[in-house]
Image 1 (tube, helix red, strand yellow):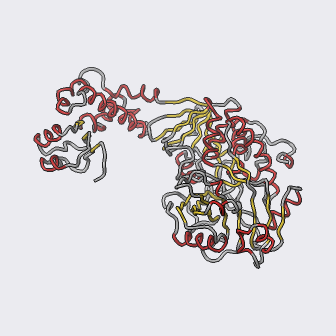
Image 2 (tube, helix red, strand yellow):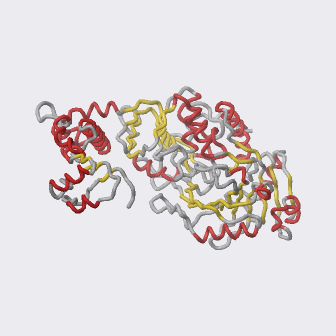
Image 3 (spheres, one colour):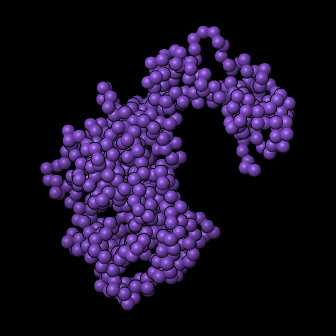
Length: 562
């Protein structure tokens, strides 16, 4: 049996017979009724009482219908128009409070419960309990300037930037932590680099690094670790991560320090652990000033830096968002029954973006969700020091998308297992086809893709040991690999479609999102990130009255990120 404190019988009435009560596993402290009566007879209840199991009767724990009827009787208009989760939240709140009060009045002694019920159950006289519901809604309403949906990279970065402008926010995250394990911002490491095939992103990274440095100084935390980055492999042409030749050309054009390797032999000479490159038609380029970002730690640092200007609400799944009110406000309602009333909303919840847009009756965006896999591998400490941070390009072959990466042992600090060292190895191509929502997402990933990663490790890092664990995370993708940073309504801005490359820009993305709301100049030209570009517009077009970039770009748009 599974140890637990609460028994909640909810399938059938009269299910707890004398035999069941006698033989029920030890450890149960409370029996909380969710049926008309869980006990077959009084004797069965007495057995539970003697065993020290306190029964919270259904009149307390399962009175939802009666409480809802009370609201209907008191104010039928409110009953018919209120968001159901608010009514449910109020009922749940009353039930929990009454159950706790009853246990206290009974002095935590089961045999005293029945005699103390009158201390908890209200009289039938006087005003109905439903009259308290409007006040409860007001008491559970938070007023703020901006409600942010999603506590990953973009959400925490936006909260940080808004805070620096003196703008308050409430950040809603449905997980139990910021950057939760189910989302794409979770983990020890994300690459940062100027080594792009695109000058735009290379310059954007340079600007973002200044903001990362500022964040580190503000929080006193080390978030970026410089350890270099090697691009190497075949001539694949441009991919979602660029290419070796494209990166080399941009590095040369922008006069950024780098080293170029013309052959696989040169790569093997420079990196003996990559001896498998020898004799292959490879080339490589290395940026020594690249490195990795401590991903989850960075999200928490940005929320911390936002300080009192940002209220973080974990375990707060949004179930309604109204951005079309006559008063111009945005109202968000959570599954917990809380209401957040704000001037603006930021939707930054990655693969759940369209679900929230749909809840707000706003047009969905053309986004794909990739299932992307990675794993940790054991490695001897003396070998670990020689393994570089690297990205390998090879041509696609069936389910093998050809893009592999490795993070050094310094980027796997959360793995604690007997003092051993680990490297992180993953792919930058999807398992299976792209998804449109998270309903069928498989966090276990594909065994065949894991086998591809294992084979890549054996070929390219033969000194690395066995696989320790594996993960599959969602990447929200656009077809052109540019993010979405734009307003989709007068008071709603969206960040989505990070396409596996957004994290490295961190606080700078927050500045871009904040500028959409404040009207300040954006730190980069946001034209490429428009929600109305053809690659993003879904079946229902966003109103053309909403500008692509509400934040004014400076007049030197081509130079803003230089």
